[in-house]
Length: 402
Image (cartoon, rainbow, N blue to C red; front, side, top):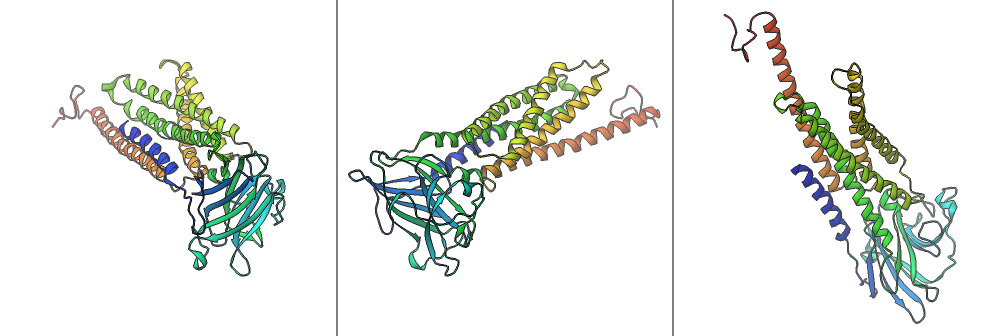
């Protein structure tokens, strides 16, 4: 349990640390702004000055490239907080000269459905000016991790200070058409509604992020740690005669706690799906439903557990073992799948879980070896006893005849 508690603290502190590690700045090499905000994904940020007397917005977006031939863009959706309908400015290296270019795009439904590549065209919003510069000035080059700042001045609708801000980045460009961006959880969540007058962001995005963190931690602890521990207690403690039936209560208690915590995590996952229309993680979702179904079957099986003298007991045990181990495997695999969809495949959180799981596997291997040693010793003693070399009343070979 101390290892489990340490894992929970590690996962929580990691997510809190990553949530607040990024920072924004109101100062750029060419301009100073009044407000700034760190965006929730991709280490991006924005800074702006809103001139209320004429509803003009001076804005700079700061992002990073993920490929030397990639693209970085941001935009405003006039109607809703989603990609479709966004009026965007996208920067990428010119295919001919290699120089940084900034072009306007309107992301209509055909772009999201990938029916046709996005083509640059004038925006139908009041864009007064725009430009893009690489961090480091004219000598800077586009590479993986290169920082870019995209400036724009817009004329907003009077008395409408809340804007739906969308940003993203991709790996490559086909001609002058940006290719589809990655589809991890972070990339699909690159949307924020910001009030440029007050400087506050709409709360539902932060709530979604909090739910994702809670979903990940609860499911990693329940399906990925407690469930395997419960299975190990049943396998290795039941043969210790001194414990009597205690092993069963320990096993049932751990598995029941794992299922209750996992049910909460599963419910949060369903809620996240409802809050993210159009965002579907097919494999992660299917594995989650399968693990939860097997867990529910295992819990219900306790109600129909035959007595040891019942002739159906052996069939129940076979069913219990098969469904139980299947649930453990599905749970652990889905935890790793969860790290992938959350964009944490190379994170310290995943490393911490791997260390915890490796420790559990190491303990199980040691207990398995010990069980086989004990089994082989008892088999040898039983064989000697049948051959009459050990007296029935002797213990541990003390009655060997000459």
